[in-house]
Image (cartoon, rainbow, N blue to C red; front, side, top):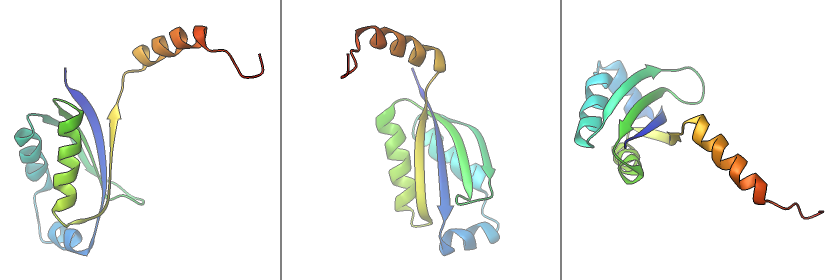
Amino acid sequence: MSIRAIMMGAYNSEGAKGIIGGSDRMAAVKAVAEAAGGSVNHVSFMRGRMDIIVDFNVPDATTMMGVMAAAHASGTFSSLEVHECIDNAPVVAAAQRILKAYVPANA
């Protein structure tokens, strides 16, 4: 079972120079995902605190963190975040099951 993740990054000045210089980010992101045994769903630039968002799949959480570490080690980001996407239905089912056993402190 693979993990779907969202990674957002803010480029530093070196990263911005690479973008302006015509660096093909989609090809670079695909190469990283494939090296990690995964795939890319979508890549976009964005406005706001972060500059780029990548929606990708990898085999496991360890690989997901490895992708982030490698991207950060490139020296082209001032900030990176990675978030695992989790399907709603299993989370709700787990919460419902756990809530049955939960006793509030004031009970």
